[in-house]
Length: 135
Ligand code: ADP
Ligand code: MG
Picture 1 (cartoon, rainbow, N blue to C red):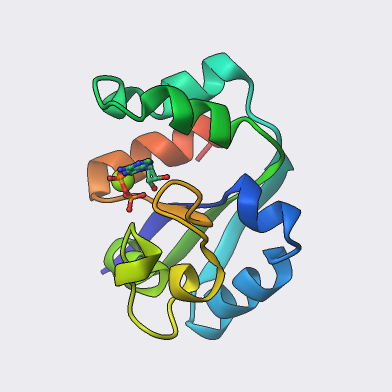
Picture 2 (cartoon, rainbow, N blue to C red):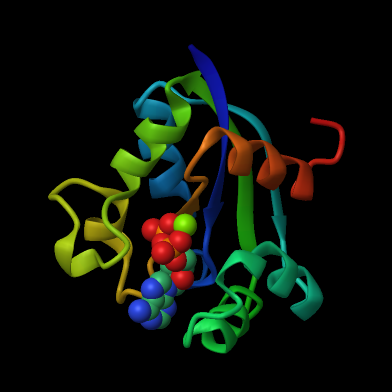
């Protein structure tokens, strides 16, 4: 089934100039980029986006990080886009990520882990709408 998912290139990867390399991986794996925008999230924006994690001990650190510099946000489309983007991203902790994944190649730590991907159809739809109101 053709699906859409939200991808974010996080501030660590943007500041290290990995944007082009990550977009290249995304396109080489058959994803269509439906929308793409570079922006800096405001603190309220970061808190709202990660609200699901607000009880976790690293929430403050997470919001500080995601708002620390520009990000590149993309709506991706492909068959099984949600699962396939998470597979291409690799495990949350880059130390546990498979070889060839974005996080293995470009992430530095469990917090500063280069990319975001939606985890289910409902969250994908919500997250796409969060950034791209007309989608
Ligand atoms: P994923 O991004 O793989 O879906 P989660 O949804 O569990 O992972 O966590 C959201 C984000 O919170 C992670 O991508 C990472 O940036 C941050 N994070 C997760 N676990 C930790 C941790 N133990 N310490 C610091 N930051 C974390
Ligand atoms: Mg998640």
